[in-house]
Length: 185
Image (cartoon, rainbow, N blue to C red; front, side):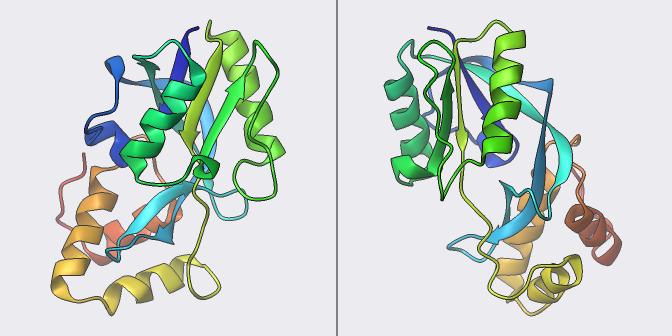
């Protein structure tokens, strides 16, 4: 089984022990992405978000595993999360991760179409959701960053700047305008 690992954030530049072949390459797969998840260390991280996300290209690498469950387990370990937060499609069996929490039908359909058109049998991705503590907006995200301690702010800005250059979102543009001078990936 040929399995795509889909990524758009830190998995691209910090895969850790994730098993994959080659490197994460840009693709024509487009997903709605935005920096609208607050991580445990206070960073705003990129997630798929149909409401606030900007349609951006994702990157893909071939899994080092030939079995879908091993690839899911591998990505789950990299992301330090549960299996329910790993999206997947299996075009051989027709199984997928669309459910109440996690991957939406839109995302699954988008990925299924891309997988079928690109000679893969399956794909996995991180399916964490937006968890911004107040109603999300670009202004709210900037205000959130402005009140962070210097170390947390620096970590957050580094994460946003290291995102692949093709991932251009409203929050990223607002961060660049508010904190110019940082080097992007």
